[in-house]
Length: 489
Image 1 (cartoon, rainbow, N blue to C red):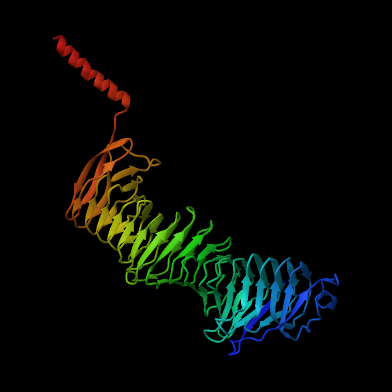
Image 2: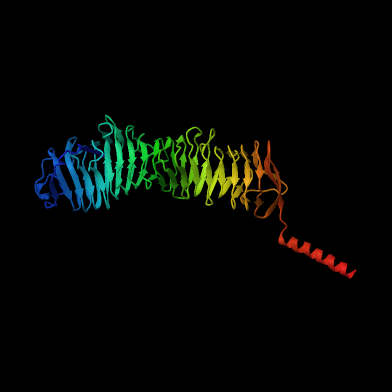
């Protein structure tokens, strides 16, 4: 197997600043593709074992099959400005040191594969790490990426607008580590890191780019810390659910065509509130862990679906606004939405078979289509122009508060269901409360309404057919004929 050790040791900045390293440029003059052939370099580089203060510059295409055996090799920095650099490093180890160490890509598509990466960065403000702009960098580690460091100072900084791919396992050494996506990160980080076990540190998401998870355990048990409203996370081909906890200091977006379940807890800590956006209409984000937060508004945005299936009664009190798409509640106990008020805007839908704890205001659509009833812990109000969609066989919604209908509220029957004329259907059942206003049935039926409030109140209707146009013509013709006979008499 291909093995890679990428060991980045970033020493804290000295008062006088980092010492500049010597630069050695690859020219390929010897036409051998061999690192050890000095004719391929602008000037003879140091020996493999003694290049701590060297910067290696590659601006032409080069492919190297340079096996280092099991030896650890130390470098300061690789700089790629053109071409395609490929290095198969055998089972050897690459170590990048100094505060400015790491790999810098400004163009081209580059890959390094070998044994193991041991990432050891001691300062969060270091200029090192992986910086990829207008290109890509792929690192493959058959024995894993070891994240080491000293307590909080355990970082692999990533920046740029390009694509970084890590293939291997994220493993832990000593104090664990943190992947830090810098504020300037607007590219994509692909983690094809199945089997990761790292559990100390975080994925610090200060950038606005995309992280694609290609395995359920791609991040081990690292906490995902969102701190940029432009941050995006993508469920890859191999990832369907992750156990990681999430700290949402800002908003974040789920992109891509694959559904994703977050089984860890979600802590909403930003004072200004958060927006969770599911971009594609066919994509679902399921939040099955506990959700907490009390400041600002929690917003569901985007055309996709968010499912809340945890018991969030005691920890979540934010007001919830559903701007677009669908919010489903599927909890079995407690309140999926916590205790805050829920507002469903005109372009959004509320559905499910769980419980909504706070007062609910519907400007858009309430979907009743489950055999298990949807439950509301407080008042439910339908605002002007809102609607209810009903499927045959669905249980009536259960209310513990008042029910009100504004002007122009309509009930729409599911066209795929089988409906029986003369049958009585229940929409709502109340424990005890008042019912105000009325609603209209749209479509090819009409209804005789039966509304009772107070203890054990309900809203029900008997379905009746609307006569077809031909029947109306015969009926009106009969009336005209009676009038003509009356005049003749």
